[in-house]
Image (tube, rainbow, N blue to C red; front, side):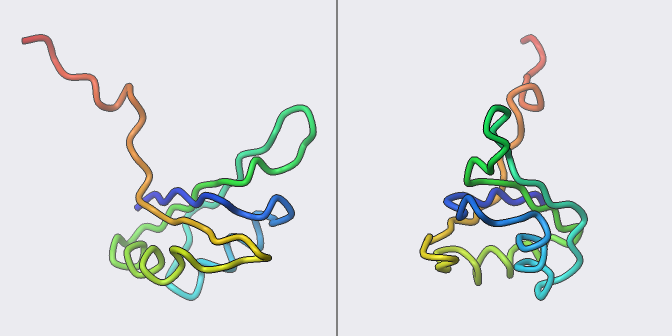
Length: 89
């Protein structure tokens, strides 16, 4: 299950983000979206957990949690637009 984590403190590292989710189960991947010019975090990222139950538990427990003064938001990541292309009718 791929999760979108928003409103992260810009100082958070990928290791810290991963550590936040690990108590809920295996973290398959974890990535922060970085600003190309400044090299700083844009304040959001993605966490992938192979077991949907673990992802749902993490989402429930971590959504609205305050991290370094920021109330983070955790939700299921939407599929990219190209994944949603429907066949011609």
